Image (cartoon, rainbow, N blue to C red):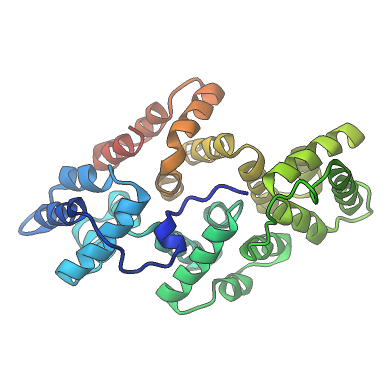
Length: 324
C-alpha cells in the first residue's frame, strides 16, 4: 500500500489521547516561551521542531486542555510572516495541517494547484479518510465538494479521483503478471493508443493500483510500448495535471525520490516557496532520513544544506531542526 504519514492515533480518530508526562512538560515549555512580553523563538523551535507527528498531535490536544487555547491560534498571535505560518502548521495535528493547506490553496482568486496536489495525490486510503474528516471538522464543509467547486478540467478529475481513496490492497492472486499486462494495455488504449485521451481511465488505473501492482504495470508497459508510465503521462497530459499525475505515480513507485524532487522544486526558481517547503518538511518528517539519501544522490548535497541555504533567521533554524 502507499505510505501513510499520519500516526495511528489520527487513523483511530482519538481526539483525547493519553499523554505521557513529557507531553505536559512540552506544553509548559511552550507556555513559558510565549507568555509575557516577547516570544522565545528558539524555545519554540526546540520544542516543536524536535517532536514526531504523534507527539505534536498530543501536544496540540493537551495544550488546549490545560490552557483552553488552540495552539495554532497562539502561534498566529505570537509570530507573523513565514516563520509564524511554519509554527502554525507545526503546531497542528498532521491531518488538520493538511486540511488547512487545502483551504489555503483554494482561498482567494484562483487555486494554487502546486500547493493542492502534494496534499491530495499519492496518499494512503487511511490518510485520505482522516484528512477528509479533519477538513469537515475544521471548516464544516465536504472537501470533495469544495474542491469540485473550485477547479475544473483534467486536474479536477485527477484530484477528485485521488480523494476517493480507491487504492486496492495488494493480493498476489489478483494482481498477477497477466493482470499487469492487461492493465498496461488498458492504459495504452486510454492514452497513446487512442485518438484523444481517456484521462478518467488513466487516473482510475493510477489511483486504484497498489504500488506493487503499479510497478508491474510500469514494467509491462515499458516492455510492450517502449515508454514508462512517467513518460506516458508526460506525453498525454500537460500543465498542473501532468505534474500532479507524475507526483502521484512517483509517490507509489519512488516515494523518497519524489519527495526529494518536491522539496527541490520548492527551493528552485526566483524565491523560495516557503509554504510548500515548510509543509513538505513537516508532512514527511518521519521519512526524511530516506529522503535525504535520495536528495543527496540526486543533487549532490544534503537535504539540510539545501533547505538552510534557502532561509536564514528563525525559519532557517527551524528547517535545520526539522532536518537533523
